[in-house]
Length: 69
Image (cartoon, rainbow, N blue to C red; front, top):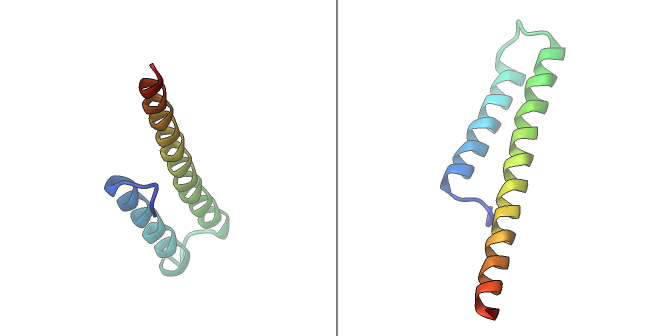
């Protein structure tokens, strides 16, 4: 994951672990809740990835503007 830092990688791994644990190892949860938990986990992963990419692009733009000034 080249766009992630250490914290983001830990977040992604934790959310993936939780979603797999919920899907396979908790039998008394309704399937609707399982799907909801997995969707929420992957939405957080996607949004953190998107935020990381946007912040990286903004940093590159600031550096380019500083070089041109």
